[in-house]
Length: 188
Image (tube, rainbow, N blue to C red; front, side):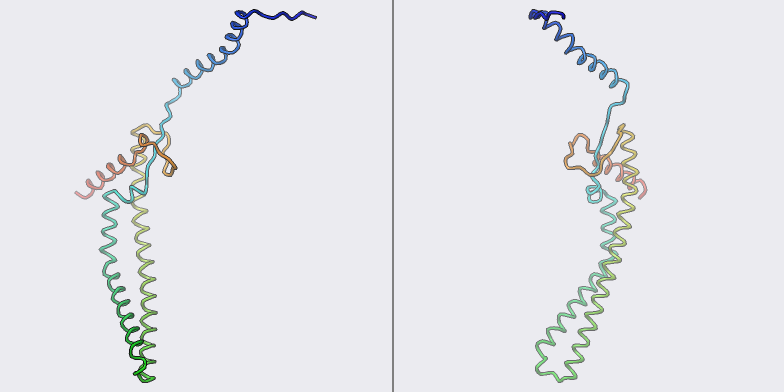
C-alpha cells in the first residue's frame, strides 16, 4: 500500500489552483465564446393600460364614445328624475288620493321603473359593446406597433404584464409615439 505523505504548502496551493481554477477558467472562456456567438438577450415591456389611456387614438375613441352615448345618458337621467318626482308625489299625496288615483299612480311608477331598468340595461350593453370594439381596434393597432418597435430595437421578447419593470426596458412611450404618428398620418 502506498504511503501517504503530506504535501508541502506550496505544492498544495499549486494543486488547488490547477484543480479549482481550471474548471472556472474553462467555464469563463466557454461563456465568453458562447456570448460572442449568441445574440444579446433584449427584453422589453409595454404597458397596454397606458396605451389605452394616453394614446391619441384611445382619447379620440373615448371622446367619440361619450358623444355617441351622451344623449341616451341624459334621457336616462331625466327618466330617473321623473320616477323620483312621481315617487315623492305618491308618498306625499297618497293619503289624500282616492284608491283609483293611488293605483293609477303606482301603476305608472311601476311602468316607468320597468322602462328605466330596461333602458338602463340596453344602454349599458350597447356602451360596453362599443367600448370593447374600440379597445379591440386600438389593441390590434397597438400590437402591430409593438411588433414594429420591438423589431427595430432588436427585442427578442416583449412582456405586457410584470410586477416590476426597469424603465430602461419600457417601450410604452415609443409605442404611443409611433401609434400617435400613424394616427396623425391617417387623419390627414
